[in-house]
Length: 114
Image (cartoon, rainbow, N blue to C red; front, side):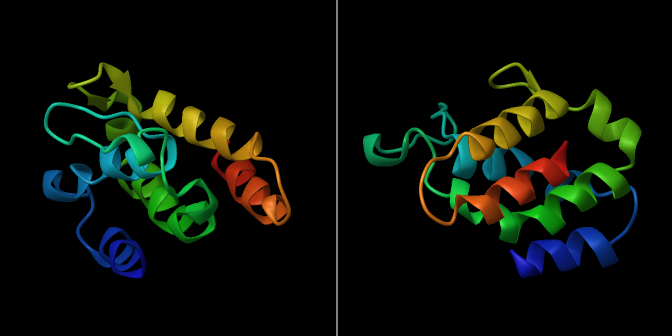
């Protein structure tokens, strides 16, 4: 996560396509959703790292702010037909609905995406 944060912050702007290709993978680690190009085992098909959003937040914010924003707003994960803004909303929603002890920190991170 720190490496991705570094690359999205200090790398060229607009963010290159090779880094944008990682955005759907971040979505998958939080929300799940197996695809033909990236199948997931049943144990993680609903995501395996929603409680890791606090670590992913700097990278996500860099994608949104340095993408540039126009690229983020018009971006789409063609394989599943979801736009990048829809994906961010889904990630924030999943994290905000997480139950359990310690979820407050994750909810605060999810609120930062909104």
